[in-house]
Structures are given as structure tokens and as C-alpha cells.
Image (cartoon, rainbow, N blue to C red; front, side, top):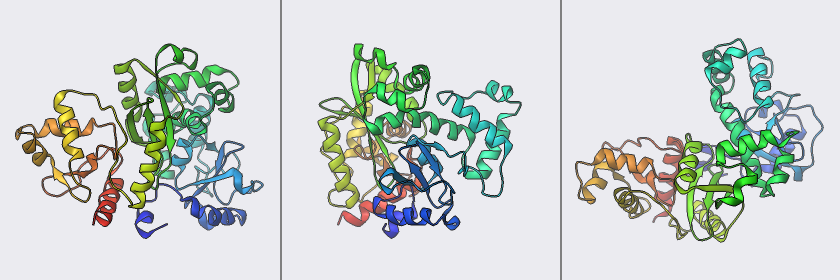
Length: 359
């Protein structure tokens, strides 16, 4: 891992897997919190010091955060309890995690916390204190992970259903349909889009495409991703199933070149639908050379709409093609990074990366 990559630790490079594996084989408690061991054959993730039998190396993958493990489709180990501090077991956390596992597809509301005899703020406080994310973030990551597991494996939907750990198909179908918009049995009656999981140094990305064009590319942990997918599928009456197209293959190659610094531009065909104004903003974003930035005001002026700064910002936020349409190259008029759906750390990394390799 380069020094620049280590500053923003979203994923564990495969080149570091062997070192992580050896540390977990030694039950090295000093590594607890630095990474998590996920076991593909059992579907669980553990802390490095877990006393359970060491799995085979080829059955392991490693994640930098608990949230990344959840998004990858793994559930926390009941033995080492990776979501608790080693010397402290919170009854609140134990009860909440158990409730999530009973129905991973649930979208939590205040009434759900009332049923458990606790307030939503209690759950939020305990989760944030223990491992830096709210309970709602945890439940969302677990919910997404159920579906992302199918995406990562690329299996037939029925196989993914069985491997998701549900005794009946209803739980899987609920999770699938709530996120991807159609129960698997009905998907063949609609416009079909295919979704694939793509690993990058900044964490996994989700790519949705048809046979000829890319429709969506976002980091898997982007806040609001479910709403983005919902808007896309509703607007186009589409069903989304795990799968890969030639567009995905081309994109994967170009992402590899981008992150290695070999080529910072993309040629993958895409379908970015929106109003004429929004499409003009997205085209203006694409015209910003790698290694350079623009402010919202500068973009508005370029479009001949100097007073439309807010509209430009809204169009920028509506972009569903991260990196392809480089909305990360837009900064505040005072030089501040301003908001970015993938997180400001990622935005800073991307800008520094492009500055290094743009020559």
C-alpha cells in the first residue's frame, strides 16, 4: 500500500492479504480494529484475535472497517463479537444486532425501537461510541450487504437466495426488491439492467449497465445509494439483477488504469438521462481536465448562466456516474472541497491522485 492510499483506508489491498492472514493466525490482538477477517465459506467476519479455528487462506478476504465487511455481505461472528470492544459487551448492541439478523431487510423506524424497549437515540449513541457509526448506518450496511453478496458472486438469483442464510425465499426477496426494485421472479418481465461489484483502492463500487451503456457507478457505501437506485429503476421501469456485460468489462479495465495513474480519462459508453440543463452541466464536468478544478460559479459562467450557481450544484449532486462524470473536480469558490457523496476524504484522495499523474 502506498503512503497516499494508507491515508484514506477504505479497503485492504490484496497484496496485504498474506500479512493480515499471518497476523490473524497468531491471534494478534494488536491488530484488532486495524482490519477484519471475512470467511467466504461461512459468511461471517471476525476480529484478528478471534479464537475460532483459522480458515484456509483461499477462503479469506480482509476489510479495513466493519462497515466494509457488512457491505460485502458478511455478518458479525458470534464468538469474537467484532462489533464490541474486546473487554466490554453491550447488551444494547447485542440485542440490536440480533434484531437485525432476524430481518436484515428491515428499514428501521422509531416504532421498531419502541418494540425493543429502547429509544432510537440510545441505539445511535451506543453504536457510535463503540465503532464510529450509527445503528441506522449498521442496519443499512447489513441490508445492502444481503444484496451485494449476490452481486459479488454473480450467481443465479435462486442460488444467491439460498446462500444468503434465509430458510425461505421471502427474506431474500424482500431485501432484493426493496433495494433493486423487483422480486427476482418478476424481473424477467421488465427492462433488465445488470449490476456488478468492482473493487478499487478506495473501496468497492457498484456499476449498473445494460449491454451498450453504463447507467450508474457509485461507491457502495455512498449515503443515499438506495434512493439513487430507486430513482433510476422507477424512471426507466427497470429491474436490476446481478450480472456482467461488455460495458462492465471495459469499465473494470479503465478503473484499473485510472487508479494506477496510467490513464485518468474514461471511454466507457454511458447513458446519463436528465434535463437539457443537467446534461449540459455533466458535459461541462467531463471537460474539466484531470488535475484541475472548477467552482460552481465558474461552471455556471461557462454555461452562460452565471446566476444559476445553485442549479449547477444540484445537477452536480444528481450525477450518478462517479469518476466517469468527475463531479469531484468541483470545489467551493474559496478553494474548500465542499460536499461529495463519496466522502471528503475520497474527494481529497482523488484530486491529489489526479494532480500526481496528470503531468
